[in-house]
Image (cartoon, rainbow, N blue to C red; front, top):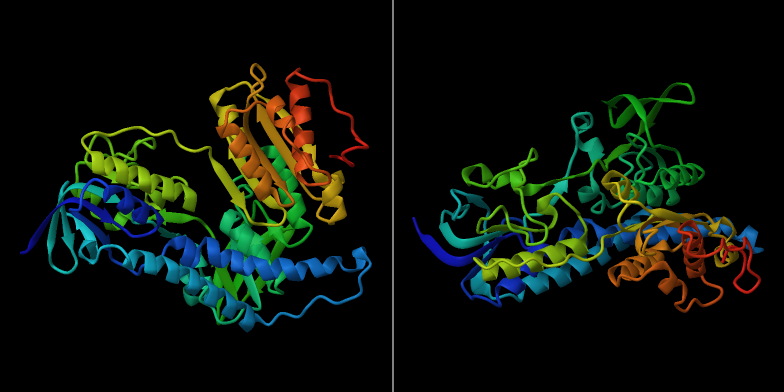
Length: 478
């Protein structure tokens, strides 16, 4: 059997794998980048980009509901489902093409198309029959959607986000299981595109939110637009012909509803279970994922590193990119391994209103026992938001009452992807609330709402008087 001997083997060519390769290559040219599936990142093919391509026309159509309130005369546009999905697929394929071109631009001698499984700590069995021995190994195999036992018997009536963006037509009705990021984004988009939709959540959770007040506001806000049960009591899910029957409790009674299709948005699972990690000496957690240091991406004290969705932590492109580069650097330097400060956590849900988290969450602060104060602003009376008829939102910003330092925030509101960024940048720059309040705020903009929240935070920390409810210079709620 042919045995390939190399310094570094990287398993997976997604976002983290590409980042790891670029960093590791700075230290050695004896390297293999192994891919057992197709090139193209999760983000480009079935994640971030196609989901936003579906959300964009949904939001454009939904805005037509406000025509009369603006004094405009018109009708809500009809939906050509085939045309919508064609654009989603075409633009998605364009984004994927850029990624494929980037990978194919890597040294051909470094690229191996085969599945790899561990034989021991250093050896990988390749599906093409070859054996590869590497001094260091970096695992970046990504993740896949999870379909639970309740939905698995539905056969081709259940799809995940991996299949949704390959459809050639919109379904006429769909039940969405899961009120996480994927369920919220895709469920709302499908509803706004005319698909009869009901969203079934579990445990009352809404996306990544942990602040009870923000969760409650979000659940109420979404329920005003479409049918959502954040803590659904589903009695049964079964296939009847080409439809799916869902029995659930609502309004104090048992309800039966039929759908053409079910979207399983019930989470993702790391692909490490197909690697044969049980043949290594690595210590694995209850999910079968190696225990690792998030500041180094090193598994235990071994020569094996892990990054991206494979580590089962934060399934976000920017996190996967950062982790890949860190794993590649330390894989290249090994046995020297250096810790690197991680960026401030940032998470955004492209629902409408948008959900954002920056820095430490409410749950992290309360469970760690850290003393904190909370600043609050609601956007229902915020000037710029009312002008645009997008005035639904609530923001909580958390601060250290001893230093005034901003610790984190949770929010739902209009265009809050921008506020979440501003807060994350401020936290990483170690700015306190007074510093941020003194930064330039144009008028009238949604960002003025952040300033209002910071003013209430300063008051809650006894560092400033309570702000007035109105300000002539900055607009209502500004």
